[in-house]
Amino acid sequence: MVSVRVGQLEVSELAEAILQAEDDLLAVGCEVEPVPFARVLRDRTLSLIYDVNGLRNVRGKPTLQELTRAVEGSAGRKRDNHWRLVARDPATIQHLDALLLPRGFSRQVCVAMALHGEAPKVAVPKGLELVLAAPDDEDLLAAISHGQDLVRRDEIWYGVEVSRQMERLALRQMREGRAEFLAARTPEGEVVGSLLLRCDQGVGFIADVGTVPSWRRRGIASALVAAASALARMRGFSIVGLTARRDGSPRRIYADLGFITVGESVDWLRAGY
Image 1 (tube, rainbow, N blue to C red):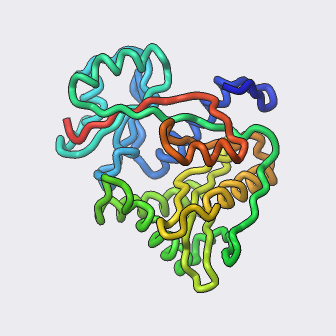
Image 2 (tube, one colour):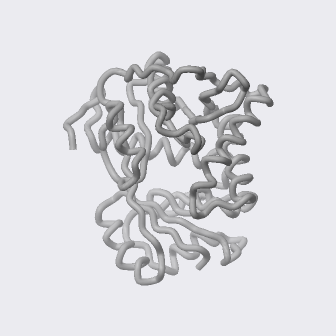
């Protein structure tokens, strides 16, 4: 791990700031319930999206019964829905591994990455323009939603209703959470890549980076992330961060742009319980 500071923040503090920014973005519009060992996010209108139906920043050594009660809530919860737990404390991760993996939960490691140095300069691929979507630009927002749906179709979990719920979540994060869509667009109005940028609480947080499959390997994602980083820095945000799967190829793209790993979190996921 590269040694890095931003102002007075050390590596561990940078990681916490970035992971907290992710938590806060996901919490927009959700029912949020703090419990002694976690922050519970719940949205029964988006029941197929485990990111907004689970426990964030689990701490300590909660029992399986305590975790189940927190997920289900006082009103109860359908047991055929996904739920997810996320932790970043090493002792908690060890505890949850022992508790959850024997019970059929899958495990994924994500990394928090912070921009180290100046915002990268990346040329926009020929024939494309990068545009920020205004909240009332319905044509552009529809094109972004269509492009995001094409990106999701590569995922093994893809389903039409899942994608629709993710579209509603992203639009809510923009309209209620002050996040912004940055899109790569052709002269004909086709959106071939996009991301969300939220500048809040001292962090320029980049999320949902995606390129339409037929347009990949042309540098579109790099151009989008570079432009979003420059925009956050121009607005005075010294911390620019994002999260990525530790074993995913996007992590290498971000590293080439100057993002370095400053911390990790672990997700456990199970369909129903």
